[in-house]
Image (cartoon, rainbow, N blue to C red; front, side, top):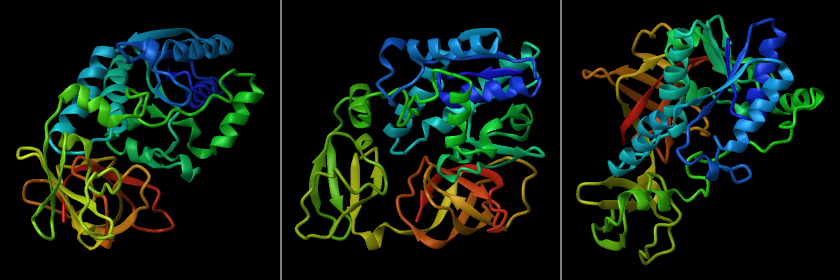
Length: 355
C-alpha cells in the first residue's frame, strides 16, 4: 500500500494506522511546487522542503520506505494553469477538488497501481464504508466535498483511515507516537498562493484587463475594475463601488468577453435552480429525477433539492431554499436525501449556471 505523506499530521497518522493494520506500507511525498523553498508560511502553503523533511522523519519512525515523487509539471498544468484559465473565463474553480481528481487519485493512483501497489492511503477526513464515500464523523473537518469527483474505481483503491475520528483524536495519536508534526498547523487557503492574495496572483498571470462594474437594477456603470478575475459570484466585500444608497451589493454575474461585472442587492442574489455539466457518480448512478441534498461550496450547509437530467447530459438541481453565492465553476456535490443517512455522497457535477 502506498501512503501519500504531505508532511502534515493527518497523513502521518493515516500512514501509521495503515502500518498498524498490518499493511505493507511505502510512503511517498509529492513535490508539487516548481519553487519549493517559498511555499510554507505557518499554516499557509504546502509541498515545501520543510514538509518533505517532516514526512521523511515520520516514515523513518514508522520504519517504512520513503520516496519523493516530482509531479510539479503535472500539478502546474492540471491544477495551477486550470485555476488561472477558469478565473479568466469568469468561473470560480476549486483547486483542491482538481488536485484530488487529477493528481492524488489520477496521476498518483495510476502510478501506484502500475508499480504493483493495491491501494493509496491518504489523510483525508472522509469515510469509506462498503465502497461508499461518506462524510467524516468530524463535521468541521469533513472533506467529502472535495472527494466527490472520484469514481467508483478510484474509491475502490483508496483508504481513508481518519474518517471515523475527530481531528483532536488525530493529534492525540500523533502526540502519543511522538511525531514532531503533532502540533503542526493545518494548511489552509490555496497551497500555491501562500500569501493568500488570490487577486494579486491572478493579476501577475493575466495582467490588467479593465472593465465596467454595472448595477443590475439601473443598468448604469457604477465603477471600474482591473480584471474580472478579481471577483466571484456572491462576493460582497472589495467591490470598490459607490452606488448611492446604504444597501449592500453582491456580484451577480461575470462576463469575461465584455469584461463586465454585474452587481445587485441581496434580493437579486438568491437562486432556486442550478444547472451543471455531466456528473461523476461515486457509485451506481441514481435513477433520475430524484431527491437529494446538495452542497454548493466547500464549507456550505447542504440544502434539500430535486435533481433532474437535462438533454445535454447535465443536471438541473431545484433547491428547496434560496441560496446565494453559487458561482459557475464550483462543484455541486450531491448527498443522500435522508437526514439520518445524508452523509453518503452520490456524486458531483460542475456548476455551469445558476438562476
